[in-house]
Amino acid sequence: MDAKNLYKHIMSLPSKERINLLTNDIIRKRLLEDDAHYPFVWIVQQLKGKELKYFIDEKYLGDILSNNKSIDKINAIMSSCNEYATDILLDDRVVSLILDSSTSLHTYLYNLDYRMGQKIIDYDIKNSTNHFSMLSSFNAKQQLEIIDTDYIIKLLKYKELPDRFLTNLSGCVVEKLLDYDKFQTMFLDSTVYDINILINHNLVIPKRLFDSRVLIDKYVNLDTNRYRYYVNNLMIRNYEFYDIVEKERFKYVDNVVNSIDNDILSKYKSIDKNNVFNNYDFQTASKMKSIINDKEKLDEFLKYSTKEKLLEMIIDLFFKDVSYNFLKNLKAIINYSKANPSFIPSNLDIYNTILSFNDLSTDDIVKFFNDNKRKDLSSAFYEDFRKARNISYQEINNGITKFDKSSSLYKKDISNEFGIDIYELNGEDFYLYIHSSRSGRWMNNKKTLCLSLISHNSINTIDNDEVIFGFSKLNINNIMHMYHSDSFSAKEEGTHKVHDIETKENLINKTTSYNEILYKENDNFKPDFIVCFDVIDDEHVAIAREMNIPIVIINSKRYVKKNGKLEGLEQNNYLSGNEVDDYDLLEDIKCK
Image (cartoon, rainbow, N blue to C red; front, side, top):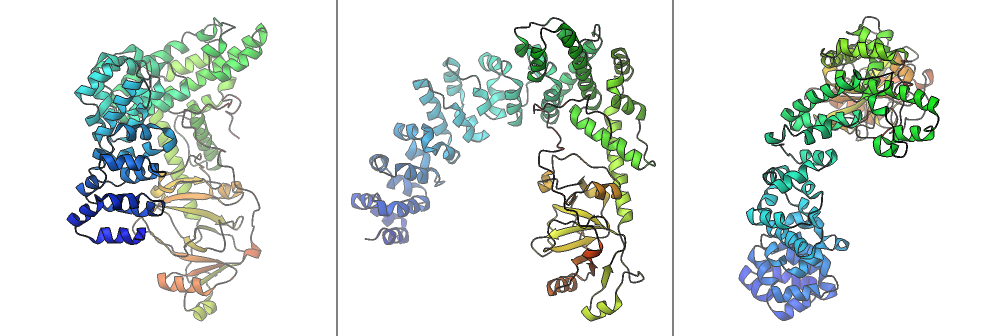
């Protein structure tokens, strides 16, 4: 019988008759022939409950494993979501096949139950191999079942556990294992990178480890950027331990700043010329190595590097942010205050001191630190940051061109012709929020929307051939981000681009192609008009009538169309804190 017709016949039968047919050796053999591969897969994935177990018994499993498409057939069983699939596959031959990375079968382990996880552990212990990373394919509940009391005992006895074994497990399993000295030692020997993985797996660090100097010092002694990256994750997921680490970090920085001798950090005092790469970060070590035998140049570099490290530590301690990101935001605030004198930042003297850091003596820096180390400057700064953004957004809002029938922009004759209100911009100054819709329709999905600001000095949009919707006003509390180019936003997930805080004129001046304003949608948020360049077509009219909104015609020949290119994705991005970037804070600190 044709394989497809055989499949249809088998699946049309009642369960009992289906089982009788599927346990027939002639039918089984037919379903292993090459032309029956897909019918075999379809049958496997449609059988219910024990039907699958009757079909694939131990003998037939051996025949499957001898088949030239055995991997695909095992894959079909693994992905069938049948509750008896694991029963069928708990065979050493199948386990070996799953553990063979060339088959990629391990990617479907999440469909099997905890017993397969235990088989993996047994296999690794028996053969001194390392497939423990495959345990990460199982969810937290399954992992708790895998690593029960018996398997904890097996793992405690096994001496060849890989160093990063814990990173394959969910937080709740690690918490359970930390009751045992072996796993506690393994955890305390982990890098902060691996501990961070466990925290992302929802590990709650036990309170009994809160006074562990080994654990605390792993964080406290990190370089500034990585410290802030990792400690921010602690703040979200392990606040009590985060609080302890922050207090210890304060003591550490306080000691470092107040232990400076002859303008040089204590860690630079005794340099092992043969091991600079083991004792300092790569960027610092590279520069030191090139001048290691020139005392004068080395001394000059160490003083400069001391000042830069002080800047990083002070910014981190005072403002709880990666220094590069903070300086980008500070510059945006200060530059905006220059463009809009009505905005006066709080703590302006402190900000100006930071912006003149490379002109300060080391004694001045130490005094500045001690004068301000007990103040809550972080809260004040981010209040300034949000306030500056809101004032900027409101200023742009207030400058958006308004359309009403009393305006000279209203075109009565054309409006009568089309049966909808028509306005025309024909050389007049204007500012408009617009959104280019690729679908040609307005979709209010209550997530986020990418807008642009256009004006008489820049009418650039993503694509003029799309239907362009316009807006008269935005709720400034719903503006997530503003940038003078495409911000490569992931919509509701936001963007890594630095925030622009600009007047409407400056935003347009900085725009080389088109700008992006990321905006959260509300239920009642809808366009106020449709924008057409030069001509109105039937689609614009139909949409305007349907939505009961006017059309604004822009005579493009009367306005500026910029020819600049988009910024690259990597330019002007915030750092997450874990990157190694060769940027010079002291050289880059001045506001433009």
